[in-house]
Length: 439
Image (cartoon, rainbow, N blue to C red; front, side, top):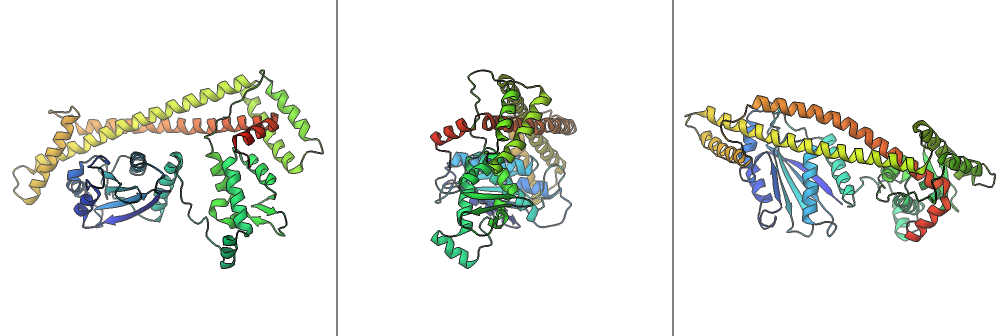
C-alpha cells in the first residue's frame, strides 16, 4: 500500500537533503542513490542547473514521499520501487537523490529532484495531472511487486445508514463489493468473472452499465455505484493483470482445435444450457475461431509455439529497451558533468563567491568522469548529445514493437484461456477448486 505525496522546496534545499541523507535513517548511507549528481553536493548541482533556467518561479526542487504498509516489503525492494518510479517519472532528465528510511514503524522513500531538467533547462510542472501520474506509476509498480495499493474513491459515497449497515454486515453494496473482489481475484477473463458472479448467486445485467442483483434483492445495483474501482472498465483492468497463474494446455493428444471448438458451440446450443453462460461463451468461441483461422492454427502445439515465440520476442525487446535506457542515462550524466566543467573553466580568474561553488562542482564532475574511465581530452558534448538523440529514436522504435508484442501476447493468453474454458470447462473448474481458487 504505497501512499505518495509531493511538495515543492523553495528555500530549504540543503536542510531537506541533510535530513533525507541521515545515516541513522538510511543504514549508514546504504539505502541512498542518486542520478546525475552526488548526494553530498546535490544542492550545488541543482543550483547549477537552475542558473540556466529562464522560466520564472522560486521552486528549487520537489520532495516526493512514498510510504509502504508496515511489514509488507523490505528496504531493498522499497528502494528499487522508488528508483523505478524516479526513472519513469523523470525520464533521465532531472538530477535526483533517493533515500529509503527505516527508522520509523513503516519503510518509506524520500525522492528529492531538481525543479528544472538539465537537458533543456525547463521546469517540472507540478499540478493535479502530474500528481495523478505519480500515483498511477507508484500503484502500478507496487502491483508488479505484489504489494497492495490504495484505490482513491473506492469507498466514497456511502450514506450514514449504509455505513451502519456495512458495520453490521448487512449492506447489499458491502456484500456485492466483497463478491466482486473475490471473483476478480480468481478470474482470468471478464467472461470467467461473470460466471463466478453467477455462481455466487447474483443475477447479471449487461447494458450501458454493469449491474448485479442478489437473491432477495428487489432492484439491481449498478457496479458504478460501488465506487470508481468497481466500474466495468476498472474490473476489466484488474482481471487483465491476473497473469501470475500461467495456463498450461495438457491434452492427451494433439487435438484439432477447430473441431473441438465447433463441438463446444454445438453443445452450447442445447436449450438446457444456461442462457447467460451460453451467450457469453458463444461470443468467446466466435472470437477464438476467428483468431485461430486468421493465423492458420489448428492444433495445441501450434498455439503453444506461437505463444512462446511472442513471449520470447516480448522479453527480448523489453531487455533491449532497458539496456538502451541505461546507455542514455549514462551518456546524459556525462554530458551534464562536461557542461559543469566547461562552465567552471569559463569562470576563469573571476573572484566572486560563486567561484568556490563552481570549483567544488568541477572537482566532483572531474572525479565522476574519471571513475567512468573518461579523462582529458574530453569528448565533445555535441557529439554525445547527437548520440543520445539517435538512441532516443531507436528507443521509440523499440517501444512501438514492445507495445505491439504486448498486445499480441495478451491476445494469445486470452485465446488460450478461452480454449481451456470452452473445451474442458469441467476440468478447469475442478482444478481451481483443488487449488483453492474457486469461490
